[in-house]
Length: 337
Image (tube, rainbow, N blue to C red; front, side, top):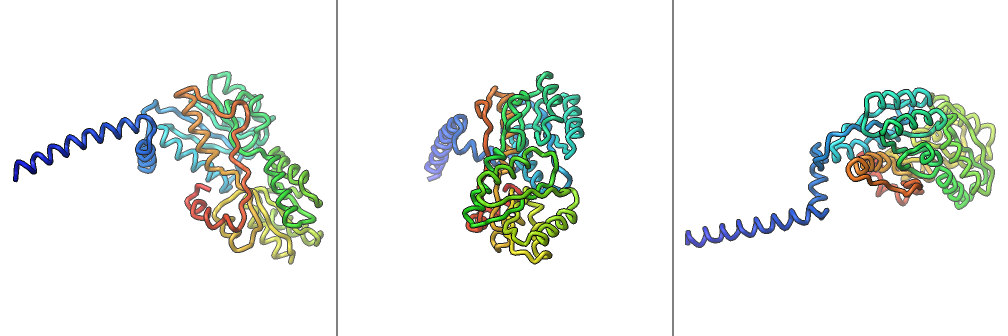
């Protein structure tokens, strides 16, 4: 009997070796087991590739405390772990300062750059400097119209005009007649495009309201004053998730019945959609913007791959309503939507 058990163990060892070789072969062709290993490695903080330790810098036009950019960074950091990349991040909502931050990364001789072009005039020269230095550049979120002309490999984000048009159409479906579009960052071309796109497809009247996005009490007070002076406004559209809450509070203080809608999604917005505090949100999948930008730079460095064929790689818009919010809430809480 002992010899039988030994034989069984020997046969099992042979089968295990054959099976292991088979699985290894599948993994090398990108099979399911390879994907599982990559996911496990990323979850444990280990790279899933053996390429050199490249450095990628991201510089955005974010102001302080904007949760949208936390989600972008979450995606970028996850891809950086997987791709054995050292990830650097800096931000400024002032165009010239953003350009200076990019310039500092060029001086550090990073292997790739990810930038936003919310204020393209301020960024044009420094992006040209990066490309001249042989540093590949990906633009994300804003600047789809300028990205190719500035020499970037690709743009990843949503077309802001198309996103705005989706908002105008949704407002029309909801029977709205007079809407307020709240712009929280003056000089941001993407914000102007959103409101212009919404105005283009909205059958009713749409007005722009400019507020200081770095001062949330001022944002709330400005919206409240507008709702008090124009009682016929039946919809308020904010251009970022953090500003939706300020609009809700302004509505309550003004005694208005206007529906509050917003661009972008986070955990608070998902909850507010479910309890009807908000009407709808427009999601551009910021996690995907960060993740794909880092991953594309790795692919370019490793294999000279590019995406888009000269056209933007679109991550939105997706109109999110109450029926969608429950499914997405878990993802918003973990910081990936």
